[in-house]
Length: 115
Length: 138
Image 1: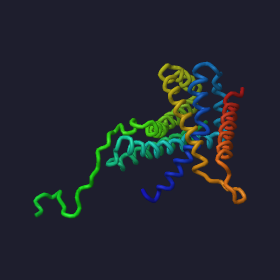
Image 2 (image 1 turned 45 degrees about the vertical axis):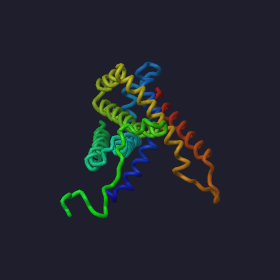
Image 3 (image 1 turned 90 degrees about the vertical axis):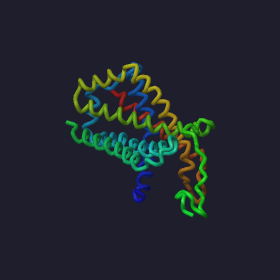
Image 4 (image 1 turned 180 degrees about the vertical axis):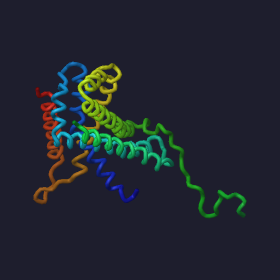
């Protein structure tokens, strides 16, 4: 665990930066502006055409995976400090990073299988 | 002498005060710290929403239509509103820390905090406009 700690901090800060720069606009459009009818959601054909481009796939992998690792790292310490669960260190670490790995695998699988 | 196994002669037990689970509510700056830490939950939530959208797009037009309909339900609108506020809080606190996290030097002189902050906020604006341009283009 100690040997990969620097990597985990790197993923944390890379994911935090991706989430800071890109999540507000994506969440505003997808979560609020499109459902509330303020703006027209992109038609299926447009998004599907975008998905066929390798750059979009790489973008989505980065956009989904890195923020998940950011969450895993930060939430792990939130549980330690906020709820004082220091005795469950290993279980929490496995669940948090495991969930981020699972999300990354699912994203990669879907992107690989875009027809 | 060793009747009590917890008793050691020269090493008394550590004195630790019990701290309440709600320690962070006692002081506004502690509360802000915990709120900032909790932004990660909403970051993960939205990452999962985007993964869900990707899944729908891979499945086909009907699945994408169902995804859009789901996001129009009051539950998702409420959660997304809260998530948007938390993600915004994350973005602002994250960008405001950049001058402290990275010290940039140009010709031996430290680049002032306001310049690093300005560059980050400008990048945020440019990236947001670019994303909006791609998703709103017809």
